[in-house]
Amino acid sequence: MAQVDLDEDVKRLLGAPQAGGLLVVADHASNRVPADIDLGIEDALLDEHIAIDIGVAAIAERMIAPGTAAWLGNVSRLVCDYNRNLGAPGMMPEVSDGYPIPGNVLTDAEKQARVERFFQPYHDGLTALLREHRPALMLSLHSFTPGLATCDRPRPWHVGVLYNQDERAARLALPWLEGQGLVVGDQEPYSGKLLNASMNRHAEPNGIPYISIEIRQDLIAEEAGQVEWADVMTRLCTAVVERLG
Image (tube, rainbow, N blue to C red; front, side, top):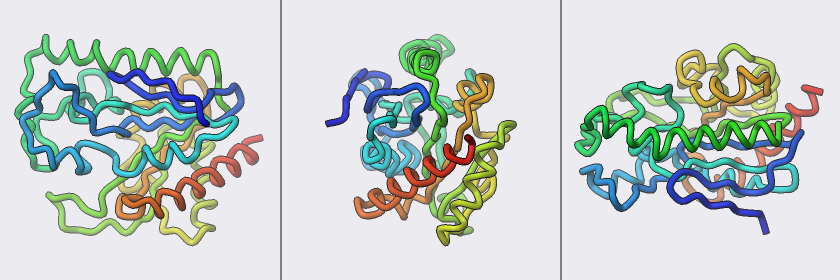
């Protein structure tokens, strides 16, 4: 059974991190809202993409094996979005995909309290883990909607690969994924030049190769798709590590 370390208010660590191994990072793996926080929204919205990256936790859990561990955010991105820069408006969004989030109309002191409770320990903990168990590769795992409520244009990609300055792993991942017969977005549906905060913070300045992956949510909303994509991600990471040398 995989080793599990649960810090309920901040993150989950699955498996045993290993120097030279693979570390999966999923900032938006949970829709959990602590009991003392009221977002002022209908409960049904917590199962939507505005609250969680649908499917990624199940994929990460299925990837755990000797040499592979996962660092999973354990609070909804509506409470605190870990994949943002400090002070960014989207860290505690007042509106998300057209839905108002009244519980996020906060004072500066209230915002700072959430940073200290969630954001800082999440990233401080990940920093410490990487210092002790430097991986050969980090997989930043996210998912995206087939379309947004505020945009009618469907998104055709099965999977997207994002990157900022360090393109080493991304340049290996793109042709590998295309070779699996997938429709692959190069900096789609988002650009890693703009949305890459966690990898900018932990991977790029430390020279750790990484792949930032976005998987379309309708492909991984159910168990069969999660099993399939866990296998794809495992084989992708193995191939990239081999080619990185």
